[in-house]
Length: 464
Image (cartoon, rainbow, N blue to C red; front, top):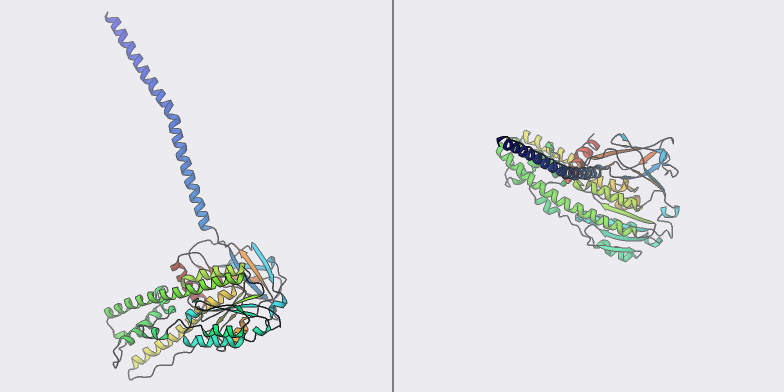
C-alpha cells in the first residue's frame, strides 16, 4: 500500500514536471516569432529614422549651385567671344572647382548701340528713391531726363520704376510722359530727422557697433552723444573725463539707437530689392533688346547680402543684364574743427573728425558693393565717382558684346553665412582681363550673413 502510494506520487510529480516543461517550451516557441517580429519592426524603424536623418543631412549640406557671369577682354579692351569651358579656371576660397555648367552668350551687334536709329531697345530705369534725399532726387531725375529724352527719338523705349512703388511708367517713347514721371519721384529720407537724432548714426556705423564691435565707431558715437546732449552754451567735456557709470549708460543708449537704425535700414533695403525683383520679372517678358539700369546711392546689404546673390542669379538665368549707377558722387570730407583754448579737447576733436572722414569713405565703399555686385554678377556696367550723372547714365547703358556663365557646386557646402571669395582666370590665351563677381554668400542666418559682410568681405576686401 505504501509502495504503490509512493509510486503514484513519484509518477504524478514526473508528469507535473513534464507538463510544466512542455508548457514552458511551448510558450517559448510561441514567443520567439513574436519577439523576432518585434525586433524586426524595431530594426526597420531605426533604419528608416537613420535613412531620413541621412537624407535630411545630405539635403542640408548639398552644395548650392552657383552661377557667375564673366566678361573677358583682351589687351585692347575688346570682349572675347570664342572661349570654351576648358579655357577657364575657377577658385572658390582658394579651392579649385570643377565647372559643371557653361554657356557663351553673344549680344547681336544691332543691340549694342542705342544711338543707332531704329535700335529699339527697351530701357528700364530703376530709381532707388527709398535711399534718396531731396538734393539727390533732383540731381538724379534731372540728369536722367537730360540724357534719355534724346534716345526716345531713335526708336528706344524707356520705363520708369521706383523702389517705393510710388511712381511707375510703362515703357514709352513719349518724352512728355517720361518727364512727368521723373518729376513725380519724391525723396524718402529726411535729413532733418537724422540731424535731430542723438547720437546721429549712419547705417554703416550702427552695423560696425553691433556686428563688428568696432572701437572707433563707438568712440565717434560717444563723442557725438556727448556733444548733442550737452546744454547749449556749455562746452562739452572731454570723453576721457566722464565717469565710467556715465559712459556705460551712454553706450546702452547708443546700442539701442544702433538697433533702431539697423531695423530701419533693413526695411528700406528689403523693399528696394523686392522692387528690383518684381522689375526683373516684368522685364523678362519684354522682347530683346532690353536693359535695366539701377540708379542708387547704394545701401548697406547687411543680412540681405545673400538675397542680392539670389536676385542676380535669377537675372542671369533670364539673360537680363543689370547696370548700376552710384548716384553718390564724390565724398566731401568734413573740415577740421575750430581750435579752442583747450589743447586736449582740440586733439580729441581733430581725431574724431579724421575718424568720421574715414568712416564716411568706408561707408560709401561698402554701400557701393551692392551696386557693384548687381552689375558684376549679371555682366553689366558699374559706374561710380561721378558728379555728372548725365555722363554716368551714358557710361552705364552699353551692353557687353559677349559674356559667359560659369556654373559649379562649391566643395565647401557649410551653411554658415560666410562670404566665399571667387577668383576666375583665363588660361592659354595670353593676357586677358576678367570682369567677374568678387564672390557670394553661403546660406545662413541673418546675423551670420550680416557679420560676414563686415568681417569676411569688408575687413579683408577693403581694409588691406
